[in-house]
Image 1 (cartoon, rainbow, N blue to C red):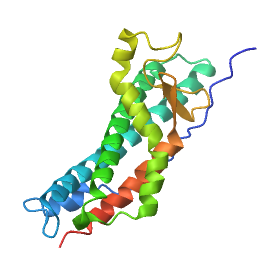
Image 2 (cartoon, one colour; image 1 turned 30 degrees about the vertical axis):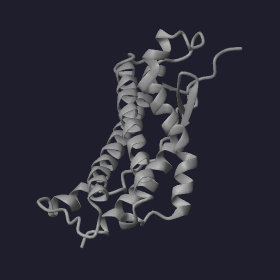
Image 3 (tube, one colour; image 1 turned 90 degrees about the horizontal axis):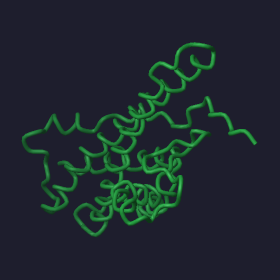
Length: 204
């Protein structure tokens, strides 16, 4: 049975409407009002704001590379040269890997903040949802981080991808036998961005 053709659709939701949060921090750069927060919560908040902007930026850049790859593939199918399709594919991998790493760090900060009364602004329902949809992000980050060790220990099955690999449907990525839906990653980032907005609202 022939291999299924690659989907010509992009299944990465567009997150361009999510405003960068660092702009609001820059306005008050010298003293980013941490009054009312514990010292730990104030530091976590600053890092959260930086990381959510980074994660969304890397996600959007990965999405642009995916769109460019699809466009180049369509040109190739119509008889044009292959062009930069492979380059876009590798750039997609690089940006998405950075996005996943930053997203995992954000989930860790949420976990730390939930026990700090001075920053108790994350609804329990949101935390529960992040625990569910964030599990695959955490697993993917851990596999990415330790893939070299898995290779060394001969823990991977034959033909398992050792770098992020986009499915033929272009709906998910996989590495080391683990999978992550791109729509799930986008939903996680939307929820984390909302938390970032709430953290900014704690400023006096």
